[in-house]
Amino acid sequence: MKLTDEAKRVRKLHKSYRDARTQMKAALAICSPGSNTHLNHIKALAELDTKERAEEIALGLSPANLGALVTTAFIYIAHCPTITGQSC
Image (cartoon, rainbow, N blue to C red; front, side):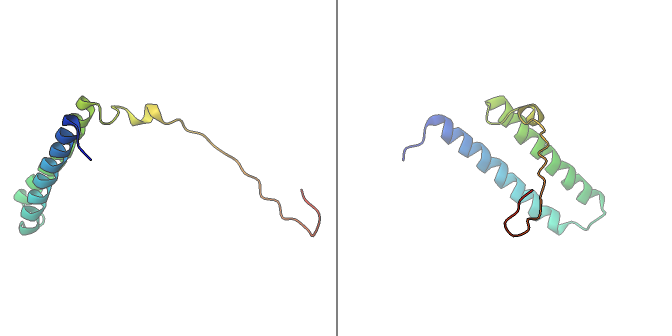
């Protein structure tokens, strides 16, 4: 199966973010928890996730507002026990 140019760019985008995230997590494991360096690594991971999401939105890969796509619905189901041969 041949990938289109767009699919290749998307794959490369995800791979670059995944590689950066892997490197940051490896460096984070070395840092002692609670230190300023540890906090900076956590902030950098959050920024990386934010940038990845923004880039996906810019490319049209994911919607900008997920809440607008999904409507809340409440479905009420009543369960009635039945006695042999009888129903609610």
